[in-house]
Image 1: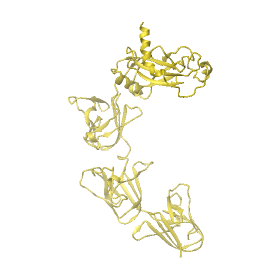
Image 2: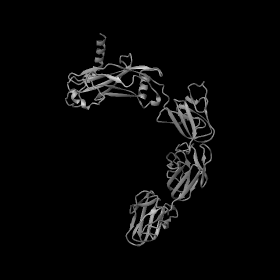
Image 3: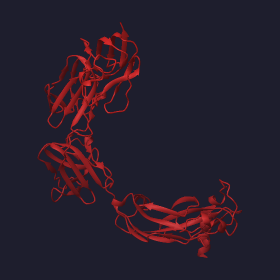
Image 4: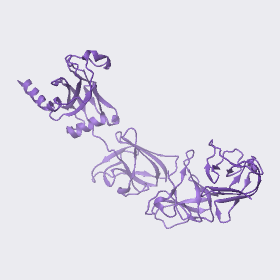
Length: 481
């Protein structure tokens, strides 16, 4: 009698599946004739049955992206009708009679379902209200639907898996304190970066002499991770009444801070890296003027991360180097000590020492954060080629004349012969320098040293020429006199 009641309930629940129409044309064949297309580990035909790869397991957050266990099932049978079979799996807490089951339609030709650690743990805690650290017995079954006329459903026996969930640690972590560049502002705390193991977090950047602790939620002082028994351990603090011990930084430098929330461990080590990974340039001498929200970003060297470079047009005017594009102007900046050195201005201080560009031109500006040095170089332009008076002897390349007021404009006036020419930016005999090369007869582009392109202009008739190149507009002309 009890079995008839269960079957009646199942039949009622499965009624929507019995009316499903075929969505694809299936070749009519006996199931045994199609066995060759099934995986070797799948039992073909016979009673519908389900099994689990594990019957007992304890979940660990370190394995959050890994498989917890998987379910596999046999094909069941279509009783020789040739009709296709689809599968529905259900999993629920033991004793619920699948009243709160999580169901998934697996479709046709699928005979396995994998459950990953993170998703399974979330389901246990949220869907089934399981208690972390306490084993829960789950039951799983598979229901097949044979698309004969009428459709026939079959339910497998139940397989049981015992699973112990974990209490997940925070998915975010922040550093706060007077050792942090952002100070004690919980709304502006600096974020750690989660690693491949999502319970491990890393912060890499500048820290000041001072103290710090760790927040789990931006803008909230609790919960926090504080200093534990020693400098290598952390402890979770959830109440104001608990000890508020902090970690101490004794020397301003760049640090790598690594935190393992499951191991409750922390390492703080100096890193051989610059305090900043981005440097910007702002001022009326720069391409975007004093619009700090659109400040020009320098390029960090891939070979030496302490080196930052800008190459491009600068106008007459002033400039300095903020470390971000914050429009409140309260950030740190690199400012002028002298023409070849700089210092770090601390946000909020009153000093405002800038460099000055006296003449517009194409500049290379290089910052070295190791020794706080700066170089500012206005580019020259040369001409080389068998059309020029010096031929291809690049060490004697013809230096073009810079315009008196616009250092982006260069001119050569003199004899040329039939042949080719182009414009290197120096007389480096390695030929590895940047050059300006031909786009067409009136335009040019900057060739990057070492690349294979080699597009030159041609002179077809000897004579005196006026050749003009503009590094800002990339316009050029050569006119026979």
